[in-house]
Length: 162
Image (cartoon, rainbow, N blue to C red; front, side, top):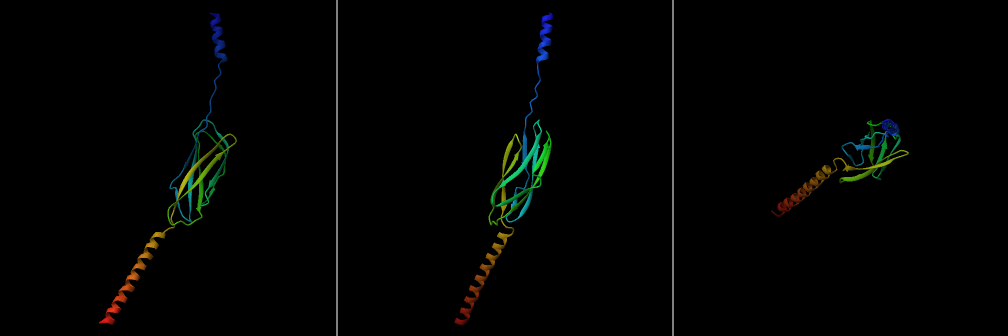
């Protein structure tokens, strides 16, 4: 009996409890994911630490297409605790004028000493404001002027003939 008790004491004293920490970073881009051509806009990115370990010394950066210029309001986070959420504003400017909808891509990069994650997003670049409205109005005006000139010429020929 003493051997069994001694064995149980020895067994339970040698058991070590390990806690496993895991990292899980969620990055979400806000809406609307569109800006006007040759215009500016602001989007927010939400960083959420869903893991059980804290992130330390996170560096944030953005890689973008030639059509865009993107700047972050915060490029470094010292600590992101488990369950903590941080919002970061992206100031986006489009450099080119487009008369049709266009797509532009950018990559949001989060890294520290141990981890690196890339998140790729797509933005819609809307056409220049009122471009198609003005184009249709000018085309309709052009057609009206052409028909008016034809009408005047036909009536003038009828007056000269009669």
